[in-house]
Amino acid sequence: MEKIKSFESFLNEEGKSGDMTADEVYKKAASNKKWYYLEDFEKELKSGISVEMEHTEDPEVAKRIALDHLSEDPEYYEKLAKAGLVDEPAALKNLK
Image 1 (cartoon, rainbow, N blue to C red):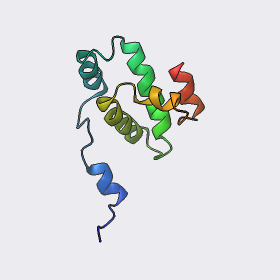
Image 2: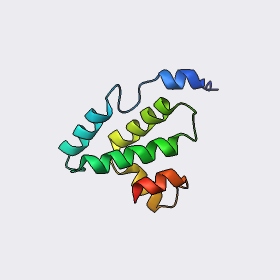
Image 3: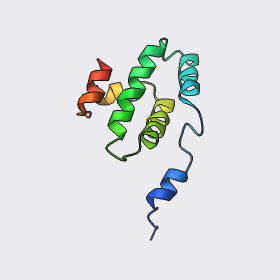
Image 4: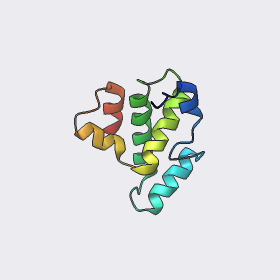
C-alpha cells in the first residue's frame, strides 16, 4: 500500500514551475504566444492566488500553486471559471 505524503513533504516538492518567479512564468507564456499582455497575466495570477487560498492560509504557498498551474496553462483559471468551477468572488472579479 502506498504511503500518503505529508503536507510538508508535498510543499517541499518542486512544482511544474520549479523555482521560476512570476516574471519568468509570464515570459515563458509570452514566448509561447499564449499571453501578449502582462496585465492579463497579472489578473490570472491574482485569480489563481484567490482560488488556491482554499488549500492554505499562506499567500506565498497559494502563489506557488498558482504559478505551477499557469506555467502549464496560462489560461488555467479563466478556463476553470468558464467551466463553473471557480466560486471565489475575488477570483471571479479579477477574471472579468
